[in-house]
Image (tube, rainbow, N blue to C red; front, side, top):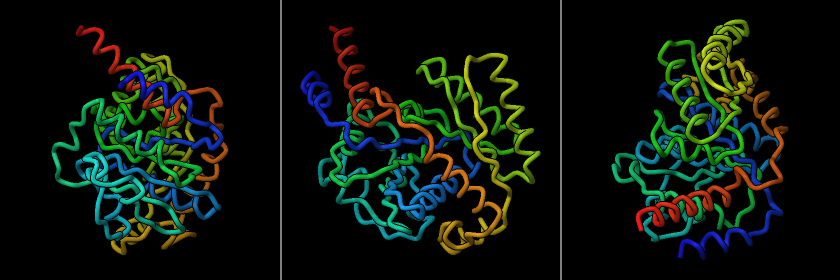
Length: 290
């Protein structure tokens, strides 16, 4: 069965390449979900078909932040009750949201086969999309690492707190050492000005440069903006409620920049490739236990 899955995936057409960006951060509270949602909506405003996967499978909050009413979620897809397209909800400017569940312990402890089932649900999606943004959970769990290494680009959100830098370093280290990820896009969030964002990036670059073989790129400096809190209270995205605010302007620039990042033509980072990776790993495990 595993070989059949891998074989069928190799035959999938690659005519509609999807840009896959994982947004992560190590610790919670750095504004990762806000960056994800607002980047997605900014891209949609530019005419792109965008989907957000709430990959915080045990503590979902993407739908809550937008005030969306959700019926079924990804747990129902995994159980076979419905297809992925049956759980999608539509957000501002047509952004599609794949909602996770909240308060379900089993969803935070998925096996590799269940990981594969989730990614297969996306690779079988009939609706064409240009960009998939994956809002990972906080921390450095297997789930976070799996989704991050699957993406073509890993966007790490950091703020000017020692714990944020420490956790971001730990995440980058694991992805680099154990999964061969070498390039990371850094977003300096909730900073007072451009200079503070650059200094924050310099701190992270200094420690990674000493101990790791990675390339970091500062792709956005998003200022602290009281309008973010106001938008959250209204259950609206910042770029929708306050499009001219300083943070919304910075995130719109990030979205435009991200759309220019190239999509690799060779396998690597695509959803189908990620599933094949998981299937191959499972096959190796089975062979090793035989």
